[in-house]
Image 1 (tube, rainbow, N blue to C red):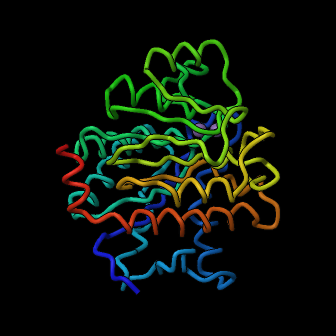
Image 2 (cartoon, rainbow, N blue to C red):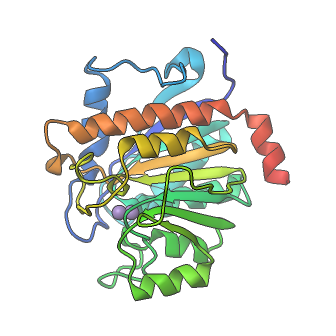
Length: 280
Ligand code: MN
Ligand code: MN
């Protein structure tokens, strides 16, 4: 077994105050840890990477969120601390609004970041219900603040006129579900941040989400995307798991599967390689 030098930290972010429709995503970190510790599955990714201390993986616990507006500062401060310690952060939401404060921290550490965003929704609203920090808006804020140089979206199947305009404004590369195929080349160049909204999956695979949008990707499709990322993966989040909507923990098991595959992909890129890519 190859020893990997990269450090990967799992960080729970129990925040769902900016969900527009249903609450419950704040319970996700606890529900996923329960499955992780249940013994139902081992902690080995498909390529043999083991999520344990020996291989540079650890659970860094939760951000101390209380669903107040101060939480965004708490999130970016905690992520910055982990990045300063040389760790790569895999955040487990929480609703999708948390990607904005996470990216505030990442942009400081990794200028010129590219984002791969998997979602049924573009999350590019200028505001929703008067809230510019809504879980429907994070990528509008990220692109306005120039926290990433490029945004590539996959799995979108709810594009309306306003969000199409926003996508145009921000130069988003969008692969809608109706056109996407597993062999579609995404042309990604590192360093890369991966944001996975679980509703990118068809609800048949992941019923435990607030917004059921049929016609989505399979779990295998998403694993295939993760395993084919050919550029340094420096950070990621898995968001919008809502345990209140789950059936027999099916979606929690999907979260754990994705945690394993994303961790393996993050661990495979050495820190030195990331630094070189950042400068390039
Ligand atoms: Mn979504
Ligand atoms: Mn989303």
